[in-house]
Image (cartoon, rainbow, N blue to C red; front, side, top):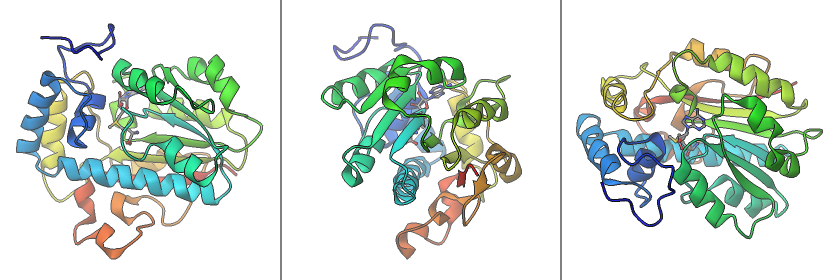
Amino acid sequence: MERPDWAPKDVDIEKASAARLYDYFLGGSYNFEVDRALGRQIEQAAPGVPEFAFLNRAYLRRAVRYMLAQGIDQFLDLGSGIPTAGNVHEIAQNTNLDARVVYVDNEPVAVAHADLILEDNPTAVAIEAELQDHVTVLGHDKTRAVLDFSRPIGLLAVAVLHFLPEGVSPYEVLAAYRQALPAGSYFALSHLTRDVGSDQVDQIIRLYAQSQNPITARGKDDIAGMFAGFDLVEPGIVFTPLWHPESPEDVGDHPDRSGAFVGVGRKP
Ligand SMILES: C[S@@+](CC[C@H](N)C(=O)[O-])C[C@H]1O[C@@H](n2cnc3c(N)ncnc32)[C@H](O)[C@@H]1O
């Protein structure tokens, strides 16, 4: 397969990746034919997928705005993805010019593109790392230079924990991050679930197994368990569109069409 000029040398262009599939579903152009081919198969088997992606992105925006309203001005975004419209640093710096953001992703395309758009932005940086490697992420020079761990931080793990490899416990990983956060910090996640009124999520899981990022879907109680040590803010764990919707149209008749549960918690 031909390697486009913009593709980093260490990127695997033979197998689709979650970052590039998500970019494809959102209408971006940082994906390869291998991603588009699998993306088309996924759309055919689960036509709701592009909507899942847009609803998830809208939730990310609402969660960041909520945290900003609570006085949070620095963010650690785990599994941040290929930058697209409405990135965390844009949302945050739109409200607070001094807001600080560390993006973490294990996909070279996501980090290369983030590096490019953050060139002139000294308070937003990107790190290429496995989020489960919390020692590297938390101890990274860039993390230490940008985030002040003596003040509350907004931790984001949006649409990423279902990609953790088998054998990696999201509970243990999150406990390590929680420990590093000062009191008053916030944590937001979204997570794929099978608890929906269709078999679309089963189709997604089946087809993502062909990508570099197989999926583990979880039920509401297991997802709620990821907030151990945080106080969930209202309305708790809900389907994506039900978390602080900005209009009735945001919710629609079938909020479970998002395929994911979301929530935000505060470290007491
Ligand atoms: C579906 S995208 C979500 C992007 C963004 N958080 C959002 O919600 O709009 C998932 C991202 O997580 C990244 N990812 C998956 N597993 C990861 C891991 N173990 N460590 C770091 N990043 C990971 C993928 O490369 C991809 O960019």
